[in-house]
Amino acid sequence: MTVASNQESTIIRTERGLTIAGTRITLYDVMDYVIEQYPPKFIRAMLNLTDAQVDAALGYIDTHRVEVEAEYQFVLKEAEELRQYYEEQNRDLIARIAAKPPKPGTEAIRAKLRAERAKFESPA
Image (tube, rainbow, N blue to C red):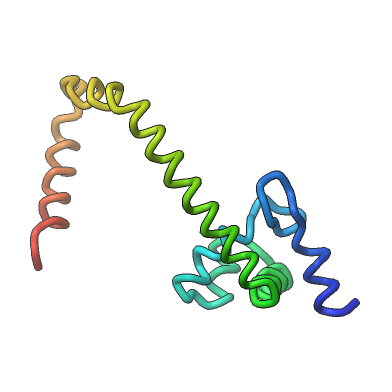
């Protein structure tokens, strides 16, 4: 079996889009790491893939870069629209939850979290 035909059988189109066969990992998940220039070994570890699966995904992306990039941009746009929709739908609920007083017995952990946040947010 050639590399090209191996890529074609390893990368399939599902209702989720271009997907690595036998997984729920889409090429758009892989693209997140490719865009950030992570090495294949890191991608393999983060997505729990085999070397062959990563090689097939990266090979497919290289071979079909224009198509994959266009679909990836569409997926990013759709995800942002969904995020905005759910943020709007849940705005009142989140405000109500934030307005509730803390549960009894959580004062110590809340103080610790505030201290850690202050360290994180303060300039070094």
